[in-house]
Image (cartoon, rainbow, N blue to C red; front, side, top):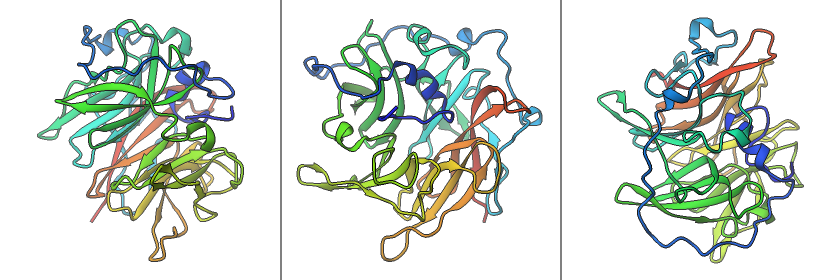
Amino acid sequence: MKNRMKLLPLPLALLVLAALACEQATPSPQPTPHAPRPSPSPTQVDRLSTIPASAVKMTPDEDAWPPVAIAGWSQPEPLGAPVNTAGGEDSPFVLPDGQTLYFFFTPDVTIPAEKQLFDGVTGIWVTTQSSGNWSDPRRVLLASPGEVHLDGCEFVLGDLMYFCTAREGFTGIQWFRADLREGQWLDWRYAGDELKQNEYEVGELHLSADGQMLFFHSSRTGGYGGVDVWVSQKISDGWGEPLNLGPQVNTSGDEGWPFVSADGQELWFNGTSRRGRPGPAVFRCLRQPDGSWAACEEIVSQFAGEPTLTADGLTLYFVHHYFTADLSRMIEADIYVSYRLP
């Protein structure tokens, strides 16, 4: 698939969205943009009620391939209830203050995408933290009542959210945006043109804290492997020509799902383990005085991906996928956390 938000077999959101995507993500004629209005407020569906009784809630003790962090980081551990369930929690994104966490959820990792459109729970969720405890997650509603849609790949900067979506009126997976007003995400609308999605083949993205640099992964020509991390600079009329981050970051394998620290000095992403461990791993590169990136270090190995950090750089969240011992089947997925040690 030429223009892809996700890359098999890593995140669960791709398992949901890829089945709805086409070879070339070309938008159909767009409907009139939504006028600002409150988000729809249908009854929130209880996530737990949609998880099949046969689903297995994995624990670290049962994990054949637990995530492993290098020295300087605490042993990764899963978030407890009510965030993680026997369903699939994926694609975490934490706000800088560490008090709000977005993630993707689907109740059954074995269900094909077309059967998840109407379950009322597959999509983006959010939870907030108080006194060290996470609240019951709530679904983030980004479509009109009755509109067929499937959302994921969430990125939030201030009052702006970008998210990828497969929905009525559009072909394949597209980038949309929404605005936060009075605690609600409003005015969701097509954002592929402003991001030059089709021209640059923009996959999952991250904006620098000042909004001046757009990091994304893409399989566009001129890279080092199947998927590379690229960056575009903000210009007067949009985004400039993407630059490949070079061989210190990208390899002949796949690197993607970038995250840039709040101070702009650390680039995090996931790619194939360079330590010979199974599954994807989380990497970090440090920015050099000349603006280039130093050689990257593998921070968390064994089915770890989509890193996101608090602004102080002390708390790392990522998704971990549980696999059977023979690697033949994914069982479920959870949001994990690791802490930078003093």
